[in-house]
Length: 200
Image (cartoon, rainbow, N blue to C red):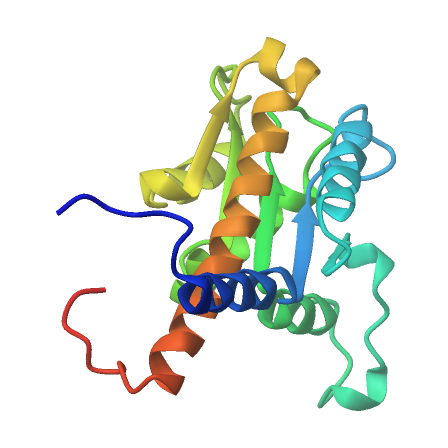
């Protein structure tokens, strides 16, 4: 049967409402990566600003910008505020660089990388080419943790693509948009009684 477009106003209204529901979804997005002491920091800022400009319902931040009230935590700990932030985020993008000055995000990936919950919400931006790690470096542990990630959770970038950044910007934007659609679809299934729908 040939599909007829534009002649079903009631269905079209349903599509309009569903699209609006997708657009209204708010996301908490964290960008891990080089600190402001690193040459790669500007690229991290570019990624953050791109996501924020895509949708005003994206709250995009660096962990160091967020101060978790200490009275919410059971005790003082260097890691607990970051645990809270990472745990509460909807998406975590980690910009990895093969550079001796970029150590924080590498430590974070080593710490959280093997946790299922973190892997489900995090996406790694990884340099295609990496120099041999110096003796005694923990970088091999980081790249090993990254290697365990599902391929769909990783974007490999070249030096040229890092400079241009369009590939990275497109990737993070598409990833956030897909999450909004998935959240909306799950809500749709629940409210329409499709929780046990066999084809997902």
